[in-house]
Image (tube, rainbow, N blue to C red):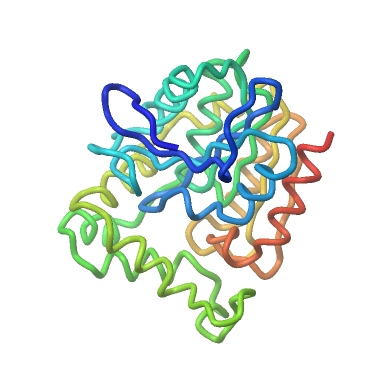
Length: 264
């Protein structure tokens, strides 16, 4: 779906279904340097099982016009402006990595409009190493390698893709190669600079699900568990073989966790 937000072209994948005001809505928000396609299995499933789905391309990513949004708070506010453009009052929000922080911010900024949030590959603080930041700022392709290698569990290069014939490293590198200069750095800095985790965690009122990869090298499960403890009543799912790219590394397990969470 192509639409206009803030006077600029924006894109959201809807599972090839028209939006229906009678159906509940889920917004899927991707992580740093990625796009809507990262949610392929999960968004498609819900779109064919009674939900409106909006797997968004954030500004400057995928098919959405730039520039990218400079902070987690700006991403959360943009999500609501996108919903306003579609005349959708309430939704659930599912976010990965940078998108998980934005999903939590959505829940505390406009609590009456957010029914549930699921946070995948998340932690607080979400600090980024200086070498990684410097490489991204210089538009050095080494930053793409860092995101790709650290963004997957160590077994990935050994043929661990659950989809036969697919190469997870190559898939992510292809996405990153499409980015305009400065977009990856912008996203990483937004994650690194975000300070609202404890306050948001304490204030959130809706049900919250954490899905963590036990072999996550970017947002380690230990940090994700500590973050979950800041959110009263949060539900927790840990995926033993997965790294940071949970939707690609453990697609069925992620989908099962989301189905269970949204079935309540």
